[in-house]
Image (tube, rainbow over all chains, first blue to last red; front, side, top):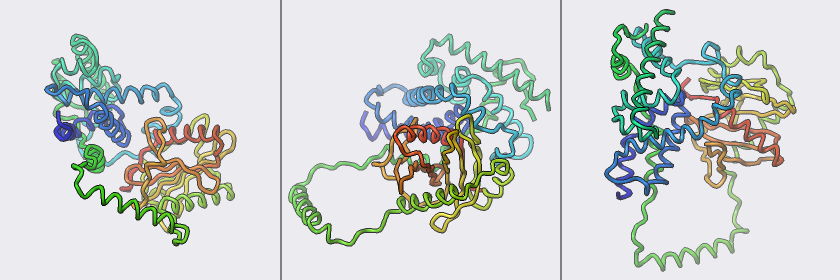
Length: 171
Length: 234
């Protein structure tokens, strides 16, 4: 594939990549860093992209691998996320202005619940149900068999359902 | 309100995700920076006039080097001016020994308002380094937000955030630290780490200058950088 064509195609997926990055990192600035790093790597390894295959899935795969490489390391350092950052109730944490009314509440619960699902389950769920990728593509991105993907998506939905029910009960 | 999940069909969750989960659009600045990275300057076919032009350019450069000592010195660049201002602010804070950790939570909202810098997340410290002060600072006539940390050995580290749209961070000074590439420089015997985040210029400054100390300074940078989210749209 010619360089120009590669670049044009790659840029088309920036919104989808950023959206997934936000749900992986749960932090806008880090999501931007992650997407930038993803494109840098995609460009570096563009010769490995097989023309005729689905570029979107290939880019998602790079994004996820980048996320795992850098963020898994950080998750092993509890001081950064637990002692270092105040929790959501702290007055020093300022939420971005939310939409008003019921829709905003629903979004927050859904996002909050999604954030509590482990990455191995969250990513296939988002890729399949939000991004509309096929199970085979998700399996390739996750580097696991299709059966595992199906099972993870099912379990992710069950977990999400339970969490949403919990939030509903508390309100 | 909680989304309606009364039905037992797992696809109800899929519908909720598709219909109610907000989709985040890539910010314009991200689109621009990715577009730039993907579209490097094009190299055209060498033209017939290229060789003589290069030869003339080389001659001009030799002449320039010959005359360089006699030419007037240029003024320091924007980054250097900002670095000097940051070091002055840091030295002032260290000499004044401004340490007041108890007052930080109460004063931070006012300082954010006055500086115009909004911290959505802030790193308050851990076992190695502690946030001890937050204050409004002035750099080059502009307002800035300054956070001061102290490590266990008593070294002060200031983290200063300001609007400085004209400041460019040269590629030659950038080094890879974890997954970021900030500029690392020294100014008047102090170490500085400079980067841009959310359209703002961020500088960390410290007296940690030896090789071993610089490693520690970079660790502090990782902690602050990864746990702070900010914007200029207060």
